[in-house]
Length: 377
Image (cartoon, rainbow, N blue to C red):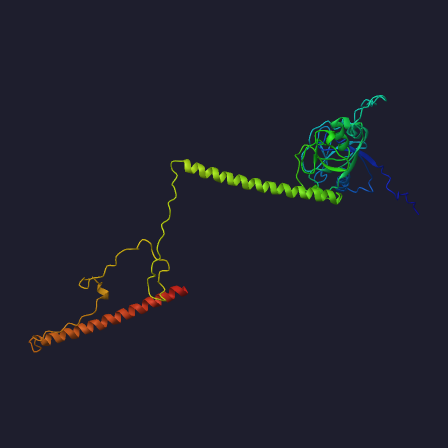
C-alpha cells in the first residue's frame, strides 16, 4: 500500500498589512489595514471592508498606487507593507501621499499669568480666567451629513491661542472633504476666532465645499432646549424673508406704475360712464333671447318696414303657378293624327330610356359590390 502525503488543514498563507490613503485628501495620514486569505476571499470583499474603515464618498470602489496612479484589480497584486490610495468612482488625484505627516499642534510658550500685587487693588475680569484658564468642550457635525451624529471634542487651553491649531484638533476626529477648513454655527454663521467658541455648543465643520443649510439641530443628540431655540430662530428668519419679499414686490409695483405715468405713451384711465339698464328684448322663454343687451344699439330708432317694398325671392322658393290652356285652339285640326303618332313615339322612347337607365344603375351597383368584396371576373 502506498503512503499519502500529509496535507495542511489550515491555510498557512501569511496576513498582509497595507497602508491606505484617501484620494485627494492631503491631510489624511493613512490607515493600516490587515487582512488574511480566510477573512478576505476576493477583491470585492476587500473593498467592502475598506469602506467601513476609510470614509470615502459613495464607498471605496478603486485602489490606486500612490506615485503613478495605476489601478489594482486583484488581491495577488497587493504587496506586503505596500501603500495604496482608496477612491470612489472619481479618477486618481495626484498628491504626495507618501510624505503626508500628521499635523501636531505647535508648542506654545507657557503663558505666565500676571498676578496682581498684594498692595494694589486690581480687579481681574472673569472673562480673562474663562478664556485663558479653561478648555472647551464642543460638539461638531460634518457638513451635509445628517446621518452622522456630532462628535464631542475637547480643545485644550494651549491650542485656543491659535485658530489653525483649533481646526487641526477638530480635523483629527471630523473628516469632511479636503480636511477641516472652517467652522460654522448650525445657522450658518462663520467663526473666525476661538473667542467665539462656547462650551457644550454645536458647530459644523466644512472643508473645500460651501456650507450646506440642513436642519442639524433635529439630531437626537442635540438637547431639547437647543432644538426649541433653533426652531424659533428658523421661524423668525422665515417670517423676515416673507416680509422682505412682499416689500420688494410692492416697491417694484409702485416704481413700475410711476415710470409708466411719467412716460409719454402712458394712457390715463377714463371714467366709465354709467349705462342704464336696457329692456330685455325677445319673447319670454325664447332660446335666442339676449341676456345682456348690446350697448352699441342703445338709443337707435326703430325703422318700420314698408309694405310696398318688393323682395326678390329665389326661384326654388317661389310658389308654383297654374297655367291655363288657351280655349281658341281646336282639337279637330288636320294635323291631330300626326301629333298623336308623335306623342306615342315620344312615350316609347321615354320608356326605353328609363329601362336603359335602370339597367345602368343595376350594373353600377353590381360593380360596387364586386369592388367591396374584391372579386374579379
